[in-house]
Amino acid sequence: MKRLASCLRPLALTPVLALALAACQTAPSTQRAAIAPTAATGFAQPGPVFGAAPAAQPIRRTTTLSSDSKSWVDADGTRHTKTSRSTASVSLDPNAVGSAVAMLLGGSGIAPSAPARQPGAGDYAGTWRLDVAGKQCDLTLQAPGGRPSGTATTFGCLGTDLGNVTGWSLRGREVILTGLFDKQLAVLRATGGNRLDGTTPNGSALTAWR
Image (cartoon, rainbow, N blue to C red):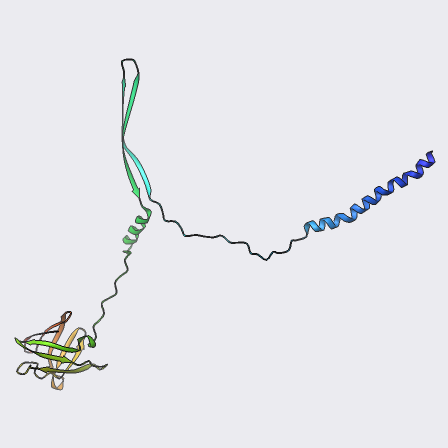
């Protein structure tokens, strides 16, 4: 019996050794599979989304200005206390404060208006009615067409300082009327939308309108 048991003992251990060997062979592959990196999915992670900042809400503060307490005892011994308070509330709008600060720093919050356009020679070209020392006649100014001066003619102005007008030019906002040999006969300045006032070298008052 002892010999038979000694012969069977190696046979009983054989399945255990086989299972142990199988576990040793499969363990590394399991560990390698566990640490293998996953394949990239190809989708980028979404970034943070920023929305428009909400408008600041008004800030309201309530302050107690005074407090007064009165106590009294009834006939049955009950004690009463009455407290009266005087409060004041202040509401502060941060948006309005920002506008006020901008105004103090020089920004009015209103877009500046465009500067007035400098009138050109074309704005004065055309026919004007003249009053020269109480006598009325007509003055026609031809557009210079890119030249420094243009042609000017008068009708019904004989016997006045403007009877011999032959040309005109624009000097800033002044209309200069000239005669033969570019002799200056009058200087007019715009005083209204369609009105010119000036004088002649002899001191005669001159008014043009249309």
